Image (cartoon, rainbow, N blue to C red; front, side, top):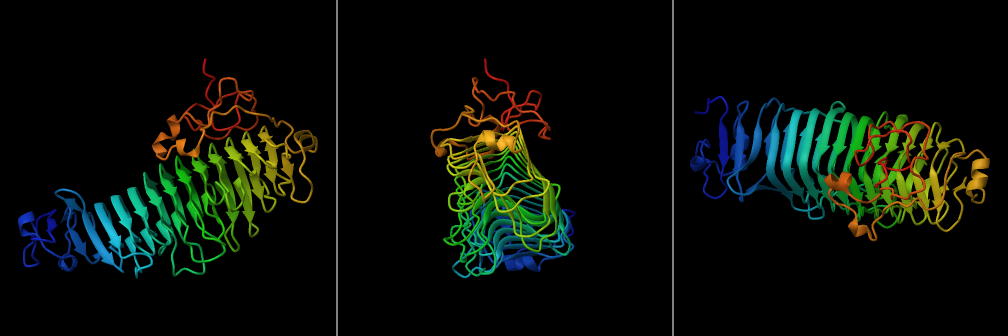
Length: 484
């Protein structure tokens, strides 16, 4: 029977025995050690009895192909890894991990591992799993090609909920969809770099992150300096982050960042679109180049919303930071930013930066920072307390007439745009699948800015709500026709 083409190996931690052949539920193995001793046939299935707890690390060695590891019976099986990793995949092909819970002993209680570690794998799928209690990460992907993570809940881990970085080569064609990363507080042993991220990807070529949620991450990073972000990427080409929600992310006292989304150093030809960020310690959208990074260029940030971001850092919905040369050529269009300080802040001028058709609303100066070469066009800028719409960081803020006359944005508009907004942040959606049908961020029927935007199209085929982008355009995320 062990030579069957696609055998199923069963594990039962209560009534199983390692003396059994493992090929039926009634003859199940008992321990993970027995599983690890087996040479797994191509196309095999490993089934762990739901509701049972199994101790140790499942190790899937190089060359294994077509394997599925899952639960059977009622509920999910739990893998308790203690201080180690729960599942490791190394150089595998076509392996699927699904319908399991992986638990570590706690980021501050001795864990030195991650929930699931996939290193240089091909066609790996990790779906419908929950991972918590690991110091390093809930899910750690290192290199590989065609890696898919779906419906993962990664909570209460250390450095990150989900992380992807380079293995022996860059990771390629990664999909992260319908995942939730929350309460990943920080790595108590990482004192030289950021930790406490929700979802972070880097060292890759081709990645789609969509319909994911990150919240309440980063609050216990054990250092000052650069900090965590809810969902972000670095050193990546062709990265798309869309239809995600990132809110209430934090950083430790003295730490930086803590924002919603971030395109960090070395990002090229990538897009942030159709996302919602709110109530984060850092900015909703950070466009940033860290020292020593490869060039950052040709990126887009469009049809996103930021409300009440920058609570302790950056003090804005969109923030530009240039810690080094090599950041250029960004197009920021059709975003909606509402902030009680600034809508946009910057530390440096960014060559080739284009800002068009955005709605930027602030209580203080709307745009603050030395963006003197930025191509502004058809933005709606409104300081609700009349503290000016632009300052270069050296001069006093100027009002709209002076800014447009000085070449800032000759087609800018101002005043109340009459955007439909919630009365409290709790009314904003937390399920990313609700973004396209929410009532918020739409222009009211009597909005004075319907159809006033012109210039370069946003580049997307539709707005946040699925409306086609046609002429005449409107600033912001809503291109729908006025209700009758």
